[in-house]
Image (cartoon, chains in turn cyan, purple):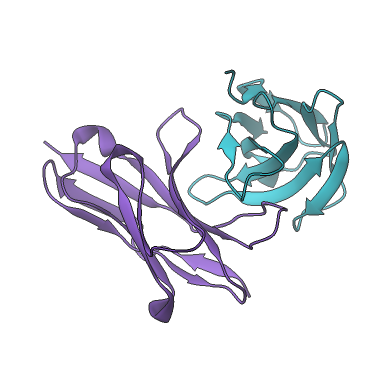
Length: 113
Length: 114
């Protein structure tokens, strides 16, 4: 059984640029959630996708957007990057019938200069 | 407002000693409660969860946690710590629905002395 995989693992961008982060969900999981974890903080919920539709969003501006594909993989896009967007971005998948348990990838470390 | 508080930012214990990590939550509805562990360069791994029933739950790696509704607490315990337990520990809460939005504490960093 393949776990949650994320790419890239590390990347550096400059302020104002755009970034796309990718996530492959665990086999059999159709729900993907994205979290932002700043240094020294707990993760913050960005949004969740279920069957290609956004299904819940945290307190993040519209320049944070996402997609889910028919194979349940997902992308997180961030436009007009700001310095405060520097963080570890975590993807988690879960089975639709699972009661709250998330399975996390190792994250994508974004640095904005 | 919904929140999770982990009062201890950093804890150091000796190998073989017992461990208790504290977690308090503020949540209007019936909470689902979780403990996750994050090692350097690794993703978050679920240690244990509480949904209902027996308030003492057993998890992986010898960890257990006890849900105390009267104290709004869900403290994590281990009777004998191993050096490999050094990591960041996060307590999280979600509602009983299906949107899987977790609210997280700031984490407790555990160091283990040989």
